[in-house]
Image 1 (cartoon, each protein chain N blue to C red):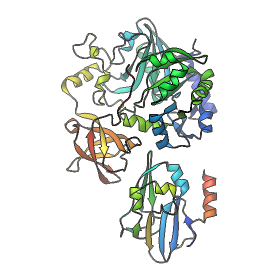
Image 2 (cartoon, helix red, strand yellow):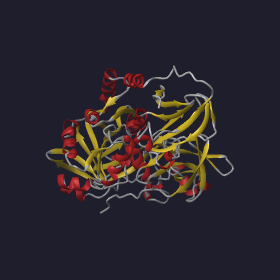
Image 3 (spheres, one colour):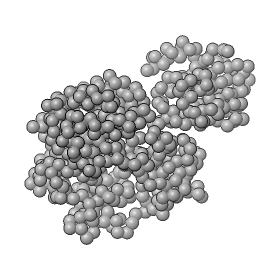
Image 4 (tube, chains in turn brown, cyan):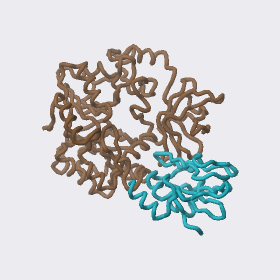
Length: 390
Length: 125
């Protein structure tokens, strides 16, 4: 049984933390990060390791070639429960939850009435009437308030005392094969309850690196013991937020609040694949979610701007906020995230441009410290995803 | 060789015959992380103290190097363009960034000695 408390207590616990430690919380793994040489920085209200002693480059490459362990306990783990929960949640996100099998999960966006995105999340079907949501750390309080406002008759539980670890990379499956052979049979976006050396966990085959991997939800009381078990494998090393960012960038994955926010729709963000066919025009369960009029119109008639990926000439990274200019020097867009891709050994970026320029091969320039740097619209992901689809 | 002197912006300078060889310190590079790109000034550029002279880009962040003194750039370390990691592996030798012919006599009293810089870093860490 999960050791959890109800949303009504959320505020008081937050308040207690605030009095102890103004502005920042720590995850259950904090001392482990510090011991591993973690450079701790405030991120979404938590002190998180941006990197460990090896540095971002080494950590990134280690994750791709071996197995990386990420503390993602700052993210919100939320249960929504009640008769008809699937249909009710479908009013808030353009996905088909009623067709999800037990232990199957889907990527989704919480939309607003303007068709913008309040957050992106992973929704897992635990029972016909129980859904497990993992939401972004920086959005969790507003997400919970939003869901509660729209679904007042459902039981919404924030799992405050659970940790979340992600084990990602080429050798993640070798580690899991030794610890929980049955979990190794899971295909991408499926999960299940399991026991790792006696520790009860909920494990899914998912992640945010483009690699095959697992996310493991565990009671805080067992979290450190689980980390010890995983770190005992030679292949497993802690990976910080810096490498998490470069890994997801190479994999073409959006970072909420940067590549997508309440002013951009899933269609503009280029994640139209996340909108279930059944929720689109002509689908069995068409529309019926916040912003459906805007989003369905955009699918039918197109959008004026789109998120695209860029390859960058040379080695100088093009970063968030850099303006994108056309041949005439007119500002046509902006970079929403960018950095150096250690696997690619080249800079990689994403940004928004007018739809007519969002064509693979389009040559543009990004202004870096006032100087134009040639960039080319490119197909994402830049590093092929290696999800296990069975 | 004269002893290197240091700025609060984590640059080192070595002044010989009124030409300053300038780079960044080990400490600054450690903070920045893996260096992937170095942008150097143009030879012949006239810099005033405080002008942006060079940029060091790491995987995650960009660090701007402002010229600690006024003068004319007489040489840049082209090797850094090909091998930016030289900066981290040998910050105060092969990883020098640019040479500046100084405008007249300069007052270096505001800079720190090696010992003073180590103390400065320790007190700001």
